[in-house]
Length: 279
Image: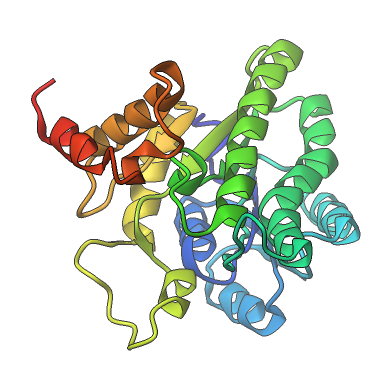
């Protein structure tokens, strides 16, 4: 992995103008990497590029548009002739419930899942053919693992990203013997513009949240250890709590409990007691 996150190599990052994408761009630039950045917000992207102390290519466009991703690859290879790491970070969150209008669902799926799939379609064949080690990092979510109620479309899209990334990792291992790897980055509660937009009364960071910079520090340490699942804690949820929540969710199927039993009125207290118990 040290030959991937390395001075002079190239990182491609979607959704790079703000939040986690921007924090990753800054961290990789500080390690001497060149950058190819994609975002829908062209003005913000130009501001980011001008502030980074590294060779930076910017491409503005919608990650759900395959032609945008093709243009991103063409311009990246024309300018740099290399891709070491692809970070599929771009995402949106808009509420859509189980029987809401499919139009609302489609935008969630197209960006949060379709953008990842399309980027893999465009970049992974190049990574396989190239002679150098490389990696794909896809942004998942805990909402795609334990799938809490409240935003079904987002949870479905992020659950699909999890499965896609697992399938990608296995296929790349067979195809390249590990030269090209895949990794699933699952943030904890991280204070980003996406979360700020959901807060109606001001934008002060809650104590429970990590900054994007804290998340990226944790992410890079785990990436350099070549972890596949990079599930990040925050100031309120430890890795142990995450593990217990994931185990409980899996046991819903094994024990034939009601769907989403963690939030079911007959099981909520049982879950709370189980979470606190010694194991």
